[in-house]
Every structure is written in C-alpha cells, then in structure tokens.
Amino acid sequence: MGSTGIGDHGGAPLIVEPSAWSQLEQAEDGPAEGRVFLVGAAGTGRVAGAARVDAADDPRGWSEALDEVGSMVPVGLTCLGACYFGTTEANAASELDVVARCVPKTLDEFYVLFKREGPAGAEARRLDPQTRRFSDAPLKVCLADDEVESETGYLRIQLEQELDLVYDEKSRRGEALDRALEAAAETIEHGDFEFLRRPRGGQGQPRFFSSSLSDLPADDAAGTLADPVLLELYARSGGAGERSAPILRYEPTSDTGFESESVSLQLDVLASVPRGARFDEGTRAAVLARLLSQLKRSKGEILARPSERVFRYLHFHPPPLGHTVTLLYPDASPEAEDAMALRRRGLHALLLLPLDRPLLRISNALSFGGPGRFPGKLLSVHESLGGSGVEGGRRSMVSGPYCYFHYMQDRFDDAGWGCAYRSLQTIVSWFVLNDYTRASVPGHREIQETLVGLGDKPSTFVGSKQWIGAIEISFILDSLLGVSSKVLTFNSGEEIPTRAREIARHFETQGTPVMIGGGVLAYTLLGIDYNDQTGECAFLILDPHYTEDEDLGKIGAGAWCGWKRLGDQAAAGGDLFVKTAFYNFLCPQRPSTV
Image 1 (spheres, rainbow, N blue to C red):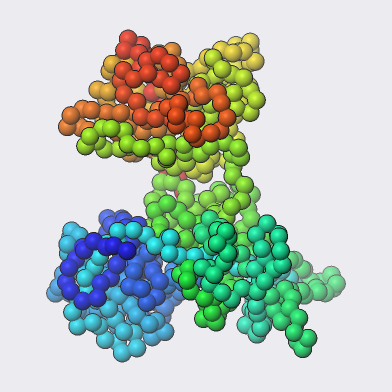
Image 2 (cartoon, one colour):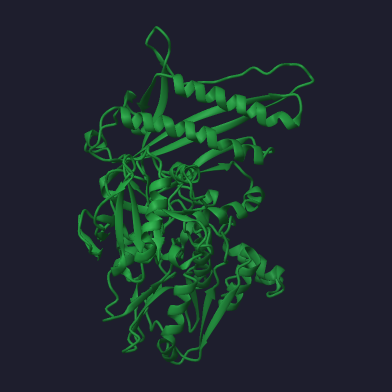
C-alpha cells in the first residue's frame, strides 16, 4: 500500500486517506465553530474520515463529542485524533495542552494534526493518553495512494426490540421509555450471546460464527460492504444449553387510567474488520457495547417524535466519505421526512458533507443487495468506457447514477419518434436515483397528458407519435419534479465546440444529464472532455435510439454510449451534430437541498 508525503517531518507517519483529506480541506474553508475530530481504525495511524462537533474544551465536553462521533461510525473505527487549522508554532503548545487535558484515558492513542497553509505544512503529534505525553518530534503526514476498502470486511448485526410503554399521563411518557430501555439494556448486558450466521440464499444449516472472513468458502463473496455477513444475536437459555433469540415483552395493565403503546426499535450495527481477523471476544464485546449505545441514544429521537411507532438504525455511505455512518430514523412518511430537513442539515455539517444535495435521506440508506429501483435496466453505462482521446483535456461529467432509457424498452415500440421521451426518462431517473424526488419515471402517455394539461398541446396529442423537444421537456421537469432548467441555444452544430467551457461549467456546478434537441435526433449528454489551451473537445453521448436488449457489450460495440466529436457519425447513422442545424441543450438545474 503506497502513500505520498505531505508534511515530511520525520518519525512514524500519520496516513490520511484521500477522502479524509478532502473533508479536512472542506472543514478548513468552512465555519470555524466546533472541533474537528479524526476517524480511523485504532492502532493503524490511518485517518479514514473527519467530523466537526461542538465540544467544550474540558474532559467531559471532549468525551461526549468523541462518543457522538464514535456512535455513528462502524465498530472497528474510532476517534483517533483532532485537527487544527492554521496553527502557528507559537500557539501550538497551548493547543497541545488542551488536547492532553481533554482526551479520555480510555483511548490507546490520539493524534493531533496541524494543517497549515498548503499541503507541505502539515505535521502531526502522537499523544499517549495514559501518560499525557506527546511524541518528542513531529510526525510525517502522508496522503494514502488508495483507500483500504479491499482489505476490510463487514459484519452486520441486527436486533429488534419491542418497547412497551405504560404511563398514567403524557408527561410521564419519558419515564416509561426509560424503564423499557433499561430493561432491554439489561437483557443485552447480562445475556450470554452467540452470533448465528445463516447461509446465503437459505441453503444449508445455520452456524455460529467465530472465524475470520478470509476463512469463508472461496465461492462465498459475502463480507463486502455491498453484501456484509449478516449475523443474528442469540442468547443461551439457562441450564439446558439451548439458544434462543432474546425477546423482551411487557404485558401492559388493563387499567383504563393508564395509557400504553408499543414502539419497535430496530438496532443495526455494522462492524468493519480486517478480512483476516478472527471474530474474537474483543470484537463481540464491541458489538454488544454498540447495541447498548444505540439503545441509549434512541431515547431523544423517540421522545421527539411521539406519533411514530417504528424506528430503525440505517447505514449510509455518502460519496464524499471513506467510511459508513449509522443514523437513527423513524420509519416515516414522505411528509414526516421532509420535516426532518433541519436535522439532516445539522448532520451534513457534522460530517463535513456538502449542504446542497441529499445524502442522508432515508432513500439514501444502503440496501445491502436489495432490489434496485430500476430492475432489468442498466445504470451508469458510461463507467466502463475508456478515454476520449483529447490530449491534456479536463473531464467534466455527470455526477451520480442514472438509468439508461432507450427505444423499445418495456415492450413499448417508440422507434422513430420517442428519442426525446427516452432522454427525458433518463434525466428523471437521475433525480430519482440521486434522491431529489420520490416521483416515478413518467411513461410516454403520462408525458403527453401532462403537456396537454399544461395547455402546451391539444387533446389529440395524447396517444400520438409526435415528437417533443427541449422546451417541452423543460415543462415536464418543472411540472412533475419542480426542477427548473436552462437552455443553451446554438445556431449551428459547428458552434457547439466553441462553447465547450460553458457546457463544462454545467457539469461542474450541476452534474445533471443534458438533453440535446434540435437537428434531426435527440440525445443525452453525459459529459465533456475539453482542453482549454487547444480548444480540442469531445462529448460523451448516450444515444436513446438503441433498440436491443440490456447488454453492455452490444451498447459499447455499437458506440451507443461513447465519446464523440464534431464530424463524427451518430450510432444510428448520420452526423451527430449537423453543421447547419439549430440545437438546444436543455440543462436541468439541481435543487440546493439536503
């Protein structure tokens, strides 16, 4: 595993993964409030992420902040340091004194990263929390050449608890919840547990898991983040040596002077472990401790939402982060989730995530191999492509997944007239897959009915084979999704490369697919590769005129998705950009929201 020196000051290195370094750069440019803590695996000296938390500079304040961040990351990761920005050598000593005074002694090690102006200015110091002594010399800080995903395995442990609350008046609901949570915690604390792994696909006998992920059969691909090993928690019953799932039930009184309710709480722990490490007592204890932590931390959310009866811990892996985070959400209606925007904004700020895109909505949660939202269709087909051939160019690309919609899908024959409809469907799928909307992708008839309802088309348009263009698509996006669009107008196909910088800016700021209308045929634009010194550019075209099955090989071989230049032929034949034709590029604007 390689690494590149950032601050070279000698001593044992502190390694920072690229995603974590990007977070630190964002934190450096953001508000100064709060303390930035570093996340990583204990004993590795490797930083996988960062979080900004309001913390009083005293032992209690730091302990609470470290617990808050630690509760969100997988078992196996912890808070292993803090980062200071722009610290001069003159005041570094006082900040080191604060760290030595505030770091809990329960930690094995703690790093202080000083990120000064420019990457070469970074240096670190290592604290031994037991002795409160720092390393004598600054440590080298290295930027890792890669992430550690391939070396990491994942275990997932679920435990559902039914919390039965009984109280005589609403003001005492919190006391009833305390009793239920304490009883559930006692069951976990005093139980003698085993971890049961059921075979994938339900084949074979379940077995208790105590080995390492590398000991699994060679044909068993489980243990990845996409498919973690799912373990069930089982408790030994007294005496007989049998095991059963831990169940806590409380029978409420029938007294009419009391109120009762049942709250379902789905605990869900993700453990990140080296693939060769055994599932030993230390890891088991850490998993049980995290289950207890989830119980304890659920109280505030349950009390804050008295109308909700089901709460689940969900796992997220937003693209900017190098690790997962686990958060508690109610099993909420769309309206209730909209009301949680303020909470999500706070979580984005804590995790140093962008504040202009949805990354922590319920629909963003990892599905762990569950059914996709567009079964049977291909996603992000451009990812397998090679280079564009533009020497020294800069790529500006669609940001996030989309579904490839094209002619003849879903047994609907729209060959010869439906290319713009299919481009619209691809664009809508981007908004669906990137969690900006809960709307479904409209079919041809719904598109036509919407345009009639808006007064743009006569009633005879419904059921016809009439074309639509960029302007009609802008009406649909606004009506169905509330998404506005900008239109770039070109008087000829020859003009398009001259405005490459403008097109690139759309992808850099919005990242949405672009519908190309005008000429004779409609296409979807996914990106541009542009050399601003030479003017050379290529366009990444997704062609909706493809009529065969969902086969990446055929799509690639036929250049139905590929890099094209002015003068190149379209996959369906004819010039891609007709030099004398008029063109509209419809550029959907991404809503700024969490």
